[in-house]
Length: 166
Image (cartoon, rainbow, N blue to C red; front, top):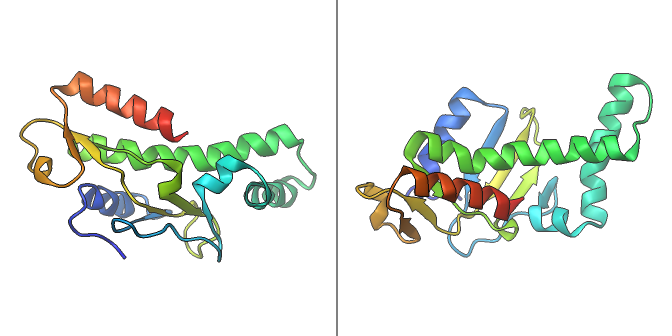
């Protein structure tokens, strides 16, 4: 269920307006990320195994459909990384660009469904694990807020958040 009080919900609503190929739902505190029915938790992708194979099979199928042949495993892995990393980075950079807020997403707090009908990229369900913001941001009073002193510190938060997630 979407959380109206989340510091990043409005940023994802604006993202959906300009990029309707990706839907992002912010989960409530303690709410589990979805699994099954197309949903694959990011932690399962990071762990490897059958969920990663299912995720990569989508790229294998697309390559066969588009090019009439199978791709090498390294090519499929590269496509899979891109298909996950690009929207995962949007989870962090869109709130930063639009609101000067940088959410943190451990892999256990993100799930991705690339098979959602009508969404070319897919849909993500996320549970922020706090966020960084600048002094004077009204969201600084929300639970999980971490106020950083300036824009450079906020940029460092972006780099750290992306590196921690990926």
